[in-house]
Length: 628
Image (cartoon, rainbow, N blue to C red; front, side, top):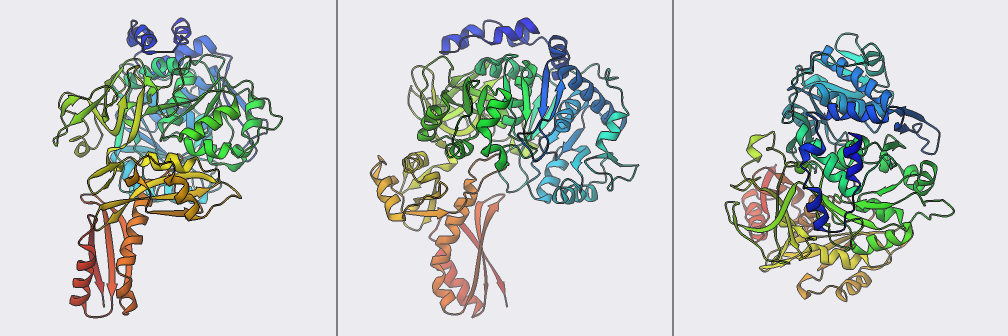
């Protein structure tokens, strides 16, 4: 493995370099059948090198523990043997709700070695977590105990109560919950198992599923994307090439393991290329102490990669580097959602390294495009395709089939095909529109590809704001507002309009101790937005932008807020007449966004008729419930 890994660190400046890399097949570059085999080979080359460094919880700058590659393999073997002893079969899943900690890494790699890992966002509501675990057919649960987090243990207890099919539950950081039969202490149980090898794992292969990763968002039970050994092994080569990972790299692990950025891009790939992961806090980048000490952490550990989601980059711009030595940084990478160009420029200038943008999805294992490190940094682009994946922009018909590939720089829907692409969602009902008839994964993202192969995303197909038939890309509004010196985050969505269908509006979060008036922001944006129709009809100031568990702006919440505001205004006259009106907006499995109007008081038939008259002109569906 050593020679192959050295070959990953090749120049990446153009598509020609990608094509040159592909002259050696992925199977030759990664000659293993399983991720576990690749880990064993890596340990053979890096046994005494540090694999993990974990700071003391609550003290990111404190001196923690170092786990070598040989020690990591031993813990992975023990964890896998622990799961097998609990009855886990190769086609069964281990669901875990763990924060960032060494045991989460042991669980991930140990579960993949003998079964399937299913990391779940612990911030989701209990019923959503239950839905994911049941969809994954989980037979083992790993969770934090009450001593570490009463809230998370309450969620684990909910799963235990509602999943009698669980064979075992392993609890981290507590013993009061353990009953010595089914609910067991993680660390003590781990210590009782062999760390030299794993018994009985022969026969696992490239196309065996080793991971179930849920898609983003928090409404309904998310789709589960399966990862195979082949998919994850391909990323050791392709993302390893794109990032230029070597044994000299040290990465600050701050993104959660239920997301591909934390588990694959900045987790599995650097580890299996011989790098070191630094866990500064169980909360990762959600810990204010990590953000506040970010530049000092770079100096302390010699961090080489400035990796973060766009919202975190905005926060880092407010943290002075001071006298911290950050010369170890060699490159920056962001992704997960569109990054404002002004933020990319500012963080590149602040850090002294080019902040590059990449693009990927849960369904494609990791990143599939990346700005070339030695090439031209085109801010606003997500770079060019990585090895072993094909990407194109197309026009799709109503059945989801490709009618034509669009011209250079013409906007189309992005589709992908390659060894990194999932075979299909776990829940079969979601696969109907996931692929074209000839096997291309439909991303749902709009974009264009320029003459040099750079991909420029222009928005989500479903995120387009359609005003009187005119398609408005929300990013042009967001980019304009991000140029304002007081704005930290901006997000544009469509607000229901009875005439135009939708009108563009924007939500804004200010930088600490800064502000501006709505009129000032509106005028500022109007001077910079190239399309008159895209000028926001309203700008709303938020104390905090709604974010997903991995720091992406959660636009469904903003759209729901916009619907509630408009419908509330329409029904204000009824309120003044003494009718009780409460509006809730949520996601409906069939109809999408759905408003529920709970009404009371007055003549029911008359009130229902008035609500219907007021709200029927809108494209957003509504229903009325009545209480006497």
